[in-house]
Length: 141
Figure 1 (cartoon, rainbow, N blue to C red):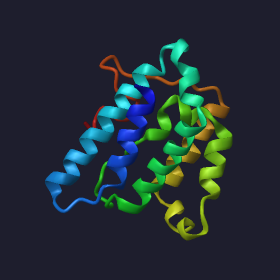
Figure 2 (figure 1 turned 180 degrees about the vertical axis):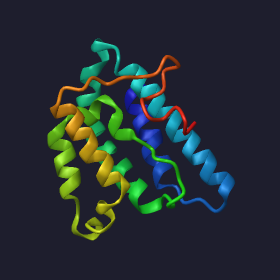
Figure 3 (figure 1 turned 30 degrees about the vertical axis):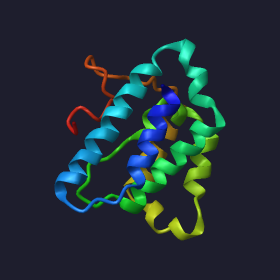
Figure 4 (figure 1 turned 120 degrees about the horizontal axis):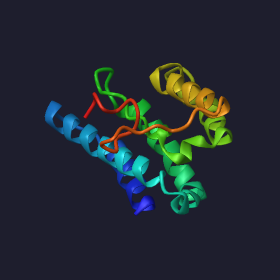
């Protein structure tokens, strides 16, 4: 289920949209997957699943897709708030990025990754709201 949720987010993130309605649907699906994954990462027995290499690669792809395909008005899609995003080496690699994304990396995704790294390094626990959504996504859904 975890791998499937990341796969859905990855495919959804790469999808080009033609209308505001499609953009809204795309955001809703991604936020629903993030909420699901944030609930799942609360179960210690599932946390190892979030550390698989294919999941890490998908997270990077999801973040790259947000930079490339989301408009400025699109709400944040904080996939880095899942358990996979606790891997600071992975986040550092994503920050270094590919040369063609250097300018884009100075945007909001870059800032969120820096914030996530700071939270992890300071030992800030992942906090989810009572309805199961990731911290920071309640107002976006």
